[in-house]
Amino acid sequence: MDNINKTIYEIVAESDSNRITVFTNHLKIDGFVYQCDGKCKEVANGILTLNNAIVCKINDYCSCDDDECSCNDIACFKYDWLNIMHSKIVSFSVLK
Image (tube, rainbow, N blue to C red; front, top):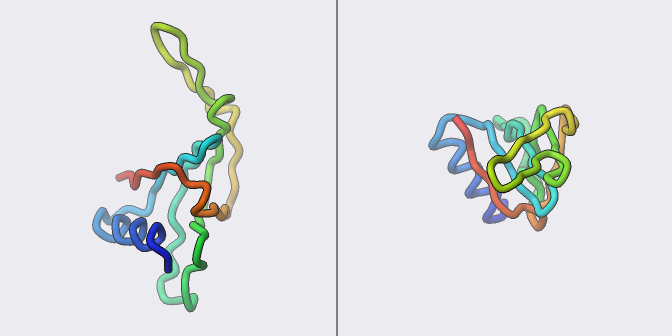
């Protein structure tokens, strides 16, 4: 398991939540970190796997003017499973 997977899984274990938001340069992704629970030999290196992921293009998702921002959930797509390459992850947050 590489460093980012290890970090994510450690935070998930400490926070007792597998709900996560991941940002790439162009996407906002909400979902649940796949919990292997001993059913697989190892988590794939270089890939973060999410269940019930909602993917939003950042440019289509939110627009801001000088006073406020508004976001459009209808511009998002839902996936039962989604694999994200670690090299594309800009930031993440494990949510309660």
